[in-house]
Each structure stands twice: as structure tokens, then as C-alpha cells.
View 1 (spheres, rainbow, N blue to C red):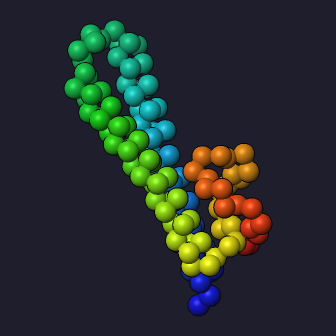
View 2 (view 1 turned 45 degrees about the vertical axis):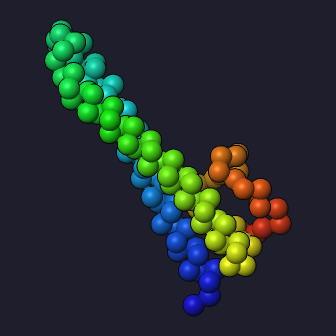
Length: 114
């Protein structure tokens, strides 16, 4: 099997995993907002649900660490791809044309693989 197709398969899983972590972070943040609003709407004391909120903050922090690890891993895999001699840009499902985060400066002269 041609190595660019294998690399694209891995890239697809990487993009999906990055999106899953982002989605989990958004859902957790929305959960926190809903919990705080529910407490206010019901007129409950600030101590009600405080321990649950603290655990959710811990979960958000862990998701933040997971996201940072995924970004670091993405950079590492990009370096592996280049060492393997794959100079094509592996395409994801979203437009990253304005995304500067995590780039390594190796994008010049690369072509998109469909």
C-alpha cells in the first residue's frame, strides 16, 4: 500500500480525534453554563451543586490537557510524515486556510491529496 494513503488514513483519525476533544470541551462548557443557570432559575444557594461544579472544572482542565497533547502529537506526526518523504498536505474535513496554530512552517510547495 502506498505510504501516502496510509498516512492519510492516520491523518483522518487524527482530525476526527481532535474534533472529538473540541466537541467534548464545548459540551462540558455548555453543561457548566446550564448548571449555573438552572441553580439561578431555581433560586438555589451557591453551595448547591458546588462539588459537582468543581468536578466539572476538573474535567474541563483534563480536556484542555488532552487538547494540548493532541496538538503536540499532531506536530510530531507531521515531522514523521516529512521524515518518511511525504511532502503532500494531508487533507482534513474542515478548512484550515486561516489556521496558524500548530503549523511548522513546512507548508510551502505542498499539494492537497484528495
